[in-house]
Length: 201
Image (cartoon, rainbow, N blue to C red; front, side, top):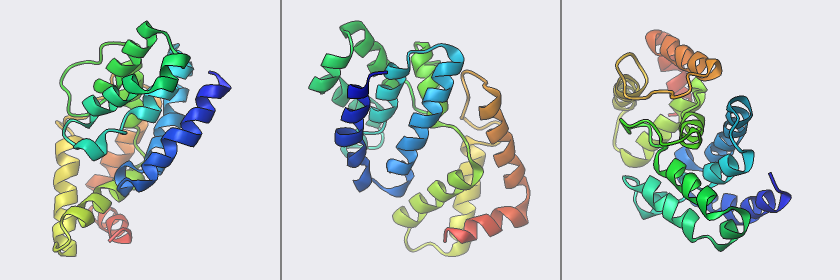
């Protein structure tokens, strides 16, 4: 991975996330960068391509959350610096990975790059997951009581992360699956779950 790519991302891309809501802020994108590089090394993907995909993957959120993956890919393809860093074929593959990273997608990503990015984006640290859920809940449902925030958190955990939820890890990396198991164990312990959630309320 080139120093020029890293410097460009550090100076021009990462600061854009400082204006985002906490669930998709710089802290999140830096975590995706770290996990993406780990998975790239483990599964033989080009680190520079994963680094670029991770850096751009949520950049389109201000244009609309529902289609942020598509808008993020467009922003990547339009970026002149990225045209200097990657071949046309590489840029198409990176854009496809960005398009394919959504947790709610039923389709398997089109390449190893999409699988790595999706799994890196979904990497689970239980407390961080709960923090992101509750920050979103507080921002979007300011009139909720503590109990309503907790109920919404449980419902989201059930829909996405617990048995039968829509989240899937494409690479089934042991580290990813261990995080999911830890979150499920926390969710099953009502007292622990409430105690952690109340820290963020």
